[in-house]
Image (cartoon, rainbow, N blue to C red; front, side, top):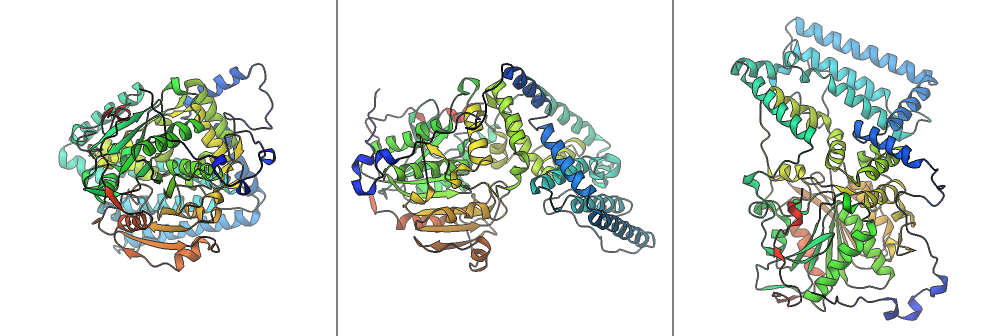
Length: 610
């Protein structure tokens, strides 16, 4: 069926004095696939180079050896010419050794001294009471003392690039974690205790778990969603219909649960790096189900899981065939109404790009913009910066060039390495030595249900947005012309999470630096996913919220934090009240639209792609 989308407002619809004459508009080319304007043409045998790098990338899990070697050599050369730092490190080694000797002597005399070295915030390897007994306590303290010394050795050094200091420290953490006493059966009191209690059955069960994991990794098999978390029945079970489908996405319209709804519908734009149902998990913590219950007409994009045949899908395709196409369909189904747009993570970054382009082109179909854990500036983009520089991006581009996409293990491994002590080593001990099975939760099922990334789109994202930071620098082009976030005039609601290591809240807060419109910033307890999943009734939750009127002066994030007290409870109702204030009132809930018959029941078909 051919459908005629609602007409967008264009520059011709705006007052002429508000527009720049076409002749004066600079034509800036959009970023090409993995290319920079000053880059020379590839040599005749470039394909051989790329194939070689792609083969190496498969062996190194996508990590560039050059980037690692560069970090080590930069650190070593700067340390070699810093006798003061060398003396300091020698003194620290002596001090740590004395602390260990005093601790060991106190233990030998039957005392219970305080431990001189404490594990990190996310380090759960030492919770068993056996680590307080000899000799395990001394082994633990020896490991933590070594870790402490290397943390000091790889701290900032005059002249050393901060990224190389951080990267060197990261490499050493990975190496040290691999030889932690907690990883070895004879060095871990919890494993010894469990082996005695079960007569070794835990080791047999652990061996079976290891064989199962190894077979899935070698075969590159995607684990199916457990039956007790079936998609569409337990997870992603909010009732609705797929009302549009194209090559890139399915658009889901959720069934109203109230007789009246707010006139303006809500469009949710999830990240494309994972599946959308992090926002529609179990019924009790489903953000989408809660929003529908508050009396809103809710639409959500479900991105497809691309394959090699989609290698040439671009970031612009995600904008036009995703957000802009969704707006066209919504305008047909709910005619005459503007749309509240909500973007999560990378979906929020893409939404900010779309909103800025719409503002530039005088397309006024947005009623408001909400950005949840989404960045528009990537200078302080968190620990993922450890994995990205020119060498690393080129390495990943060659890998994607050979296979057409960035595969699931190549992405999930980077996220796990950031918290390796908990996400890799603690899990390995529990699963392979304690014989404990992975007990799935709704969040863990979603985390394991990973997707691929089209080669061209992901290259454009990594290079143009992440590495070159074009959005906030005023160098990101849409349809040949640059966009500016300050052109956005609709109200913006920005959500940051306190312990987010993917989109650090101070980086998320910088949206206030690059916009001039009415803006609310909310900082909630939790991490990148857990902070967003903060349903009413969730224990121990709090948030802070502040308002920046249009045109007001900028305040730095630390000043903002010091002047806003925490409020107990979930942030969802706070955002819901803001959404109500920017809506025009209740109307009868819309029924089905003749031009858009249901193509499938929610959650659709793309969510099941593996």
